[in-house]
Image (cartoon, rainbow, N blue to C red):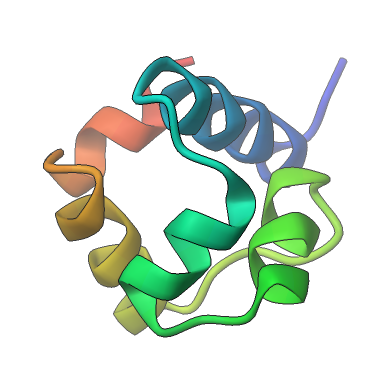
Length: 69
């Protein structure tokens, strides 16, 4: 069973792709690096709360929607 970081990463990847965005585009929208987005999506790191808000806002979602696994 996947851990929370892995589930979150898969969900973020799904939402990003559904919106037709690349990791680079999301990184630009959030002022994060591509490496940071990649690490979050692969479940290597979890996002900081401030970055979680940036990601949700950039995807026009409420933060809780990123946790619908």
